[in-house]
Image 1 (tube, rainbow, N blue to C red):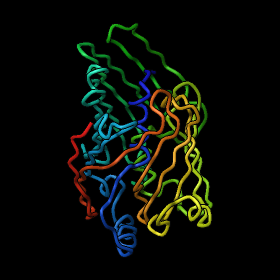
Image 2: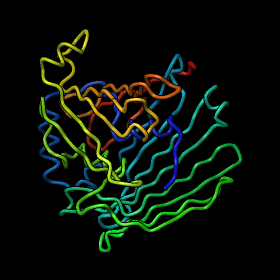
Image 3: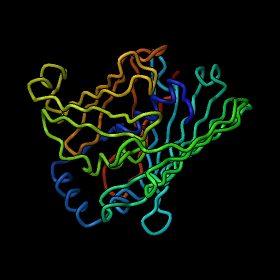
Length: 292
């Protein structure tokens, strides 16, 4: 497989976490969304959705900009694209690094979940470009990967999936989580989400805090946060010393805040949505912030 810098790995995590800052949602919206989910497949529900968000750390409010969107190809197949690009001073010292990750996914289980069939990437750093892909064969229970370019050694192999079951890359995991594939979210509940294997099977651990824990930790208005999630991810995935992330959700299970803890070189890193396009009727906000 291929390596990612800590900042780009962080952007991928925020995409998985669904870092979306919604201006206003009402209780009826959640019930309405549940009804719509029963009427549509997962791809139909999210088709055409696009987000743009800022990633910041230290005094930089906009160290990088990321965009994610999902679009239907044909039948039950969808293309999910994440594009991340460093900006300003951080862009200058990283040679304006640009990463494009694309997941081709198919609807599965009668349209109730997505599973990846191919994951591709293009990384541009200055005048160097490195590419790679991973193709999953669910019948053979193997995945085949290859990476090349960028002045580095070409690599590739075909390897078995560790065990039977599902593995989601961060992009399909993002939509599956929001569609309720992993189960209903409730205070005190724990989740173990299998992620697409790099070397061995990997699991993202999620624990929803109790209301008492949330009241003690969310200041000044804990009532505005419906769910407080503590997430532990493989610390090597995005260069963290602990792998800990705190995410605050509203009742529609849309994270309104997220902070990744103790990233090597970056410390605590935050993310904010600046623009959203959705066919599901959520109200979003757009912010313009050119400060660095």
